[in-house]
Image 1 (cartoon, one colour):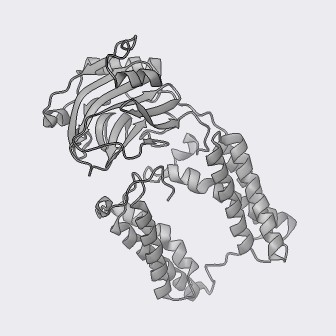
Image 2: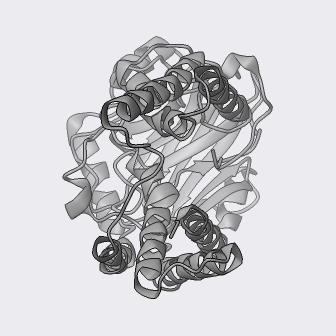
Image 3: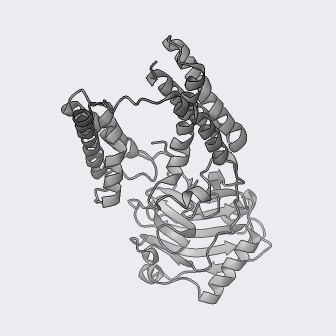
Length: 419
C-alpha cells in the first residue's frame, strides 16, 4: 500500500490472471477481518472485505509497479467470508469467542524478552551493498525472452558498460557529444545492436568468455555505469518490461533496466537489495515518449544507485543505508513464496511492538482508565520503534514511519487488552 512512486491511474494496468498461490495468500490475508466481524452478520463481513479490497486495488492503479487485479478482490472478499464462517464454527463447537484470547500473565510477560531479542535480530546486521552475490551464470541480453517474459517492444541503438561510476557531469556530457572529452576509461562493453529485435530477444549479447570478463571486472571494481540509447515503441509495457537485463530468470538478476509504462526502473542485485534487486529498486517519474530516443544512464558507485535520462538525474537510492531486515538464517527457513520484503518493514517491528506492549501490561498491571492504557501502549511501541530507528535505520523518513507504526501497534494492544 505504500508506493515507491505514482503514475497516472489507468484501467489498462489491471491484470486478472489467476494464480493459485496468490489467490490462497489473499484468502488468508483477509481471514482475520472476517474473524473480527464474527457476531455481526455474514453480509457485513462480505461487504467489509469487498469494499476494503476494492479500495486497495483501486489505490494500486496509481502506484508504480503495482498490479491491481479483480482476482485479488475476489480472493480478499472470499477470505473475509471464510474467516467469518470459521469463527462461527469455533463458537458453536467450543463456545469460545475467537475475537477474545485469554493469556496468562506469565506467558504475557515472556513476550518482553521475545520482543527485545526480535528487535536485536531485526537491526543487528551489517548492510552489505557490494556485488559479491552476483552470478557468473547470468546472461546480458536485450528484452525479456531469455527469462520467459514477454519481449520488450522498442529498439536499442547503443549499449555501453563502463567499469567505473560516472559523475553527474560526465553523464551530462555523454548526452551532449562533443562538449568535452570522452570518459578517460573506455567501456568494457560497447555495442550497436542490430535493428532486428527478434534476434536480440532470443540470444545473449556476448560470447560466454566476454560475459565472464564482464562479470569479473564489475565484481572486482564494485561499480559501473550502464549507458543505453533506447526508444520504446509502446508506453503500455509493464512487468517491468526488461530493456537491458543481466539475469537468469524473472526473479534472479545481476541488474535490469526496465520500462513501466512512461517510467523506468533499475534493479541491482546486492546482498542488501536481494536477488531480485527490489529492496529498494529505482523508479523514475514519467520520462519516456513513444518513438522518442532517450539516453539512459544507470550508475552505481558501490553504495548509491542513480538513474539519468538525457543527462538529467531521474532517481536515486542508497543501497548501503541501514534498514531493519530479517537475517538470512531466519529467511532460509521461510517459504520462498512469502513476500519477506513487505513482512520486514510492514509487519515485523509492529508485531514486536505489540508483544512488548502486552508484556509491559503483564508486568505492571492493566490500568482501568483507557487513557492510561493508551499512554502505556504508545510508550511501549515507541520504545521498540525508537530502538529500531536508533540502531537499525539511517534514513529519517523510514525511521519516522516505523516509529509511528510501532506506536500504533502499541495503541491497538492497549485498546484491546482487558482486565
